[in-house]
Length: 163
View 1 (cartoon, rainbow, N blue to C red):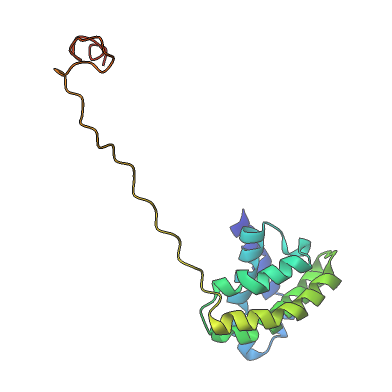
View 2: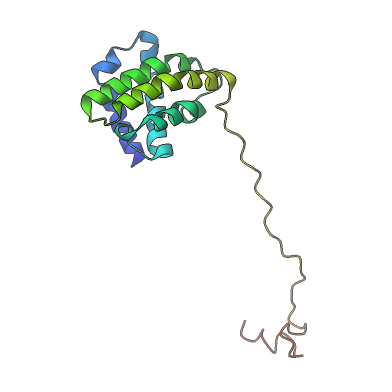
């Protein structure tokens, strides 16, 4: 469902006048950046972009969007222009209740975004190594061994009969 929403909203933005007004350099990167923004909204935050608030925008620009980019990614220079154009498009086509708060958070979080991409703080840490599977080291009970229930009978005559 999230992939469908991402595709629909991305197509709507790319067909909008806000996307056509981007500079040439930003226009090339608009698809990838807006797609990463929308995926972070739907998959990581679990919200539609029109339902975002200031804290969500800080989280998006502080860690979620940088984690989807490489260290010193040249596309990062176009993110402010592209995200601003996307928000313009969003406000023009949908009701965004927290628009003022989003704009304030956007201005505050762009510096954190730029430093996260420049320093490589956006590279996710490696997942901890999975523990080794449990291996039962006890010897296997044989058919002719005494039964483990303590009856004194061989396993094959006691509990092994039904097994």
